[in-house]
Amino acid sequence: MALSRMPEWLRWLLVVPSAVVAFALIQLVIILAGLLSGRWIPDWAYQLINSFASGWAFVAAAALMAPQANVVVAIVHTVIISVFTGALGGFALFDPSLAQRTSGTSSGFFLLAATLTVLGGVYACMQTYNEHKEAPLHR
Image 1 (cartoon, one colour):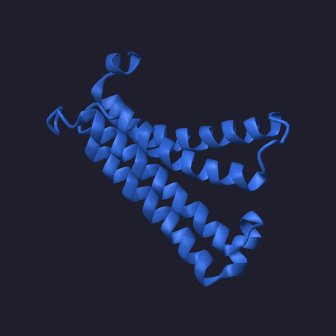
Image 2 (cartoon, one colour):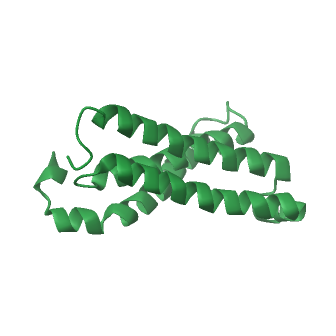
């Protein structure tokens, strides 16, 4: 794999940027797939799929980029995505018009999407754990 040939310091440096890029790219791919598919899936379903996939991509990319301690990196990035989406969900809960202004949806749908983003991150974290559970934390 090409990642194994990269210097360890560079991989550590690219952990967060790779997570952010993966978060953005998966959204772009799902949006383009929705536009090119002929709309046989409703728009709200694409939004929910996008929410789960973006949380998964954020955590999975960070864990993959990390040269060691992949499970710890996955946990930290799950916490990061949870805090970020939890804050957005909290704002939507206390100001229902925020969801309407930012995404054109109800605050309940906004909270569901935020929850799915966190669940996507948790799923990626569990995947990383299952892949590395036999290896010590410092791998």
